[in-house]
Each structure stands twice: as C-alpha cells, then as structure tokens.
Amino acid sequence: MNNLKTIIGVIVIVLFFAGVIWVAKPSNPNTGTADINQAAAGEIAAEEPVFNFGEISMSKGKVSHQFKIKNDGVGPLKIEKIYTSCMCTTAKLISAGRSFGPYGMPGHGFIPKISATISQNEEAIVEAVFDPAAHGPSGIGRIERAVYLENSGGSPLELTFFATVTP
Image 1 (cartoon, helix red, strand yellow):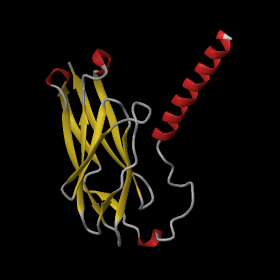
Image 2 (spheres, one colour; image 1 turned 90 degrees about the vertical axis):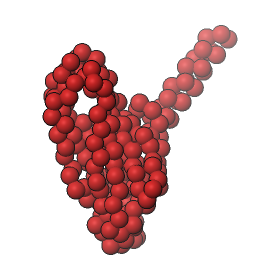
Image 3 (tube, one colour; image 1 turned 135 degrees about the vertical axis):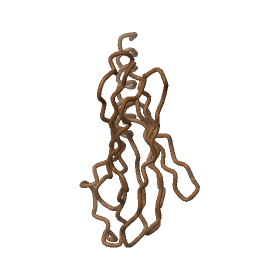
C-alpha cells in the first residue's frame, strides 16, 4: 500500500513538471490555425537587431541594452511572448508607458503570454539585461545571447548581443 502511494505521488509530480515545461515552452508560429487578418497584421522590425557590448567585467555586475523596435506594418501588432536564450539574461518590453516583464529563459521559470499591442508606426523598447557573473568563472570569454519576441506579424524577432566577459 505504501509503495502504491509512492508511485502515485511520483507520477503526479512528473505530470506537474511536464505541464509547467509545456506551458513555458516557446510557441511555434507555423502551427495552429492561420490568422484570417494576417494581411492586416503589423510587422515588427528592430532599428539595431545586433549589439556588441565589447569587453565587460564580471566583477562590475549586470549590463543592459535597449533595443528599439517598431511596427512597420499596416495594422496593430500584438507581442505574444518574450523569452531569452539563457538564464543569465532577462528582457522586458516597454511600450506606450507600460512595462512588461522581466522575462527569462523557457524551462527556468514560467514564461507567460503577454498581450502588448504596438500600433502602426509606433515604437517600443526591449531592454535586455545580462548578468556576466551568472555562470561563474566558467563564463569568461566570448558570449552570444538572444531575446526572442513572438508576435502576431508572423516570424519571431530575434535580438542578439555579444560580449567578451573578463574576471
């Protein structure tokens, strides 16, 4: 009887964590039903999709960069999800005086869907924050990280940054 309770408990825990991972995983914009209003959807673009911090010191703490994005499409654009490529990086969206986030890496916390709308020709900011000390001494050297924005305009937008981490 005690073994049965243990087995059921383990199954419940495994199912719980599988559900959390399933909810937090990035959505694939190529699956599901097509949006009837796709032609009227906005189109997201970044003024500077790649940024190089250059050399940064692990001992000086976190660094951040603000990426400017703009809806260049013919209608409103909905940002549905923001997530990062590594747990050492967080990102937040600043749009129309509101701040969404910070968001991190899928699987290392719940990444909720957001419904931030960027109107046609409106700009917004994606602030990426990188913690060079997050990986400890093994994190020294050249790094590349990314922030992904899933949106109603189709393909996710990838914002990338580079740095060379020193002690």
